[in-house]
Length: 212
Image (cartoon, rainbow, N blue to C red; front, side, top):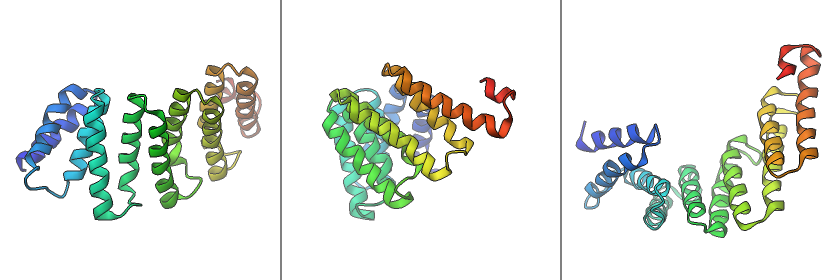
């Protein structure tokens, strides 16, 4: 493999366990090596560098690199390329870390829009985006909007799988935990009761699955 492949392997090996400070050096070298002659994976390498910088709270560099990567993908693949979902999400998270919550919401909604365009309006793959949008709303103190995002997250799963499907249960738990953290015990209890009802009918009331 080329020197670039080696740098990519090193970068990804450090990203995997979350060692972003060690990942930074190979990521920077990889981008610098392509400044003069850009390889086909230059936008992905630039985005990876931006994501690492965001984790290290090097906000200015992170925002610049992610924005440039997004621009290159739009030029090459169009503004609705599914590649952009992860890049916009990274940019949104970088804005959150920099306490630019309004910018974060706009950016994450762009990712959500592309996700819905490709995977359907109620796709459950957008759950992580909804969590990030929730965080941004909480940063602004918009507790109602934040709660609505979490309700939408469950709603997508209900539409996709149906209320009796066990795959809905983790989504109910997430919403219940959110309600608990927001000091809404009644709302949390409702979600736990829904889980119990869903578990009891197929399992019978004394099954071990109901105990948990």
